[in-house]
Amino acid sequence: MKAGDLDAWVKRYVAAWDSNNPDDIGALFTDDAEYFTAPFRPPWRGRNGIVKGWLDRKDEPGDHEFRHEVTAVADDLGIVRGWTRYPAQDPPSYSNLWLIRLTADGQASSFTEWWMTEE
Image (tube, rainbow, N blue to C red; front, side, top):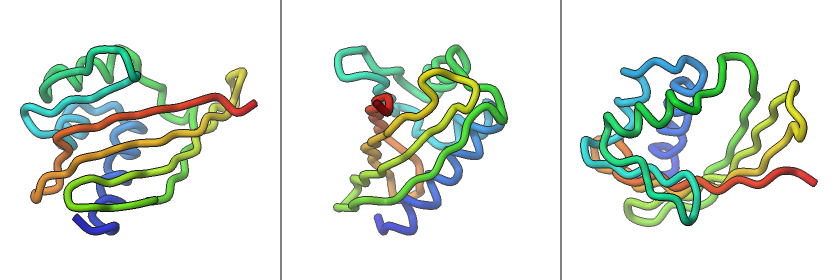
């Protein structure tokens, strides 16, 4: 994987985040992918499980702003730093760290997110 591959995947992720379209969400992940939403919580498993988990806790289009930078890439693992802002929410700002394993065809086989509120 190259930094550009990871950046393109994140842009597709953000488009799916903004649309909540199940096809857009599912296209990001392999059939057997795992999506870790917290360090000690079981992951969402498989494409269908990820789509269901995502839609069960979805953000509404337009309620958030997001920017990111690719921090590192090594083999199939990429690290992304992100900043999320929810203007109508308290607290409004979050810092994100994502670990993403991409296959050669550009789908994630594993996605782990950590976030914390801005103090």
